[in-house]
Amino acid sequence: MNKVVSRYQPLKHYQWGDVCDSWNLVDTSSLSVKQEMMPGGASEQLHYHKYSQQFFFILAGTATFEIEGNQIEVSVGEGLQILAGEKHRIINNGKINLEFILCSQPSISNDRINI
Image 1: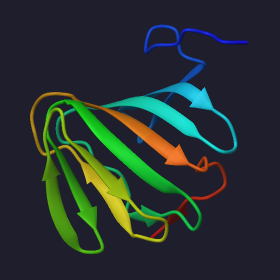
Image 2 (image 1 turned 90 degrees about the horizontal axis):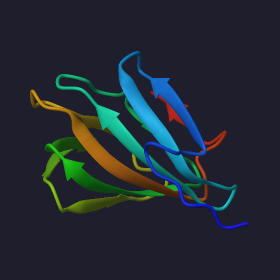
Image 3 (image 1 turned 135 degrees about the vertical axis):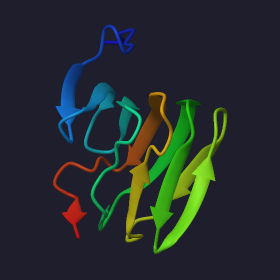
Image 4 (image 1 turned 90 degrees about the vertical axis):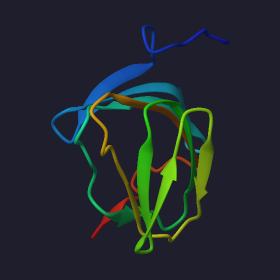
């Protein structure tokens, strides 16, 4: 059944990294779409996915991605693809909340290896 979803009516909401929020918008084994929010100064642990590729699209703030030791800044209205196997993490070096859409194909469920 088709269902309208949003940050305010997600399939599921959870917190990660103690201060970050995630709202599941699509949650199947073949595709995951989430809206996420990271407060200023937050970052995630360096990790990779053996099978999943990901695409991040920035809605607010500026994201700094560390990918295989290189840093890339991505601003509002821009997106970035991360291929399976690439060691990466997202960082919010700004003072405002970083908000983004995250698509993972296939879903990263049971496919996250922390470094």
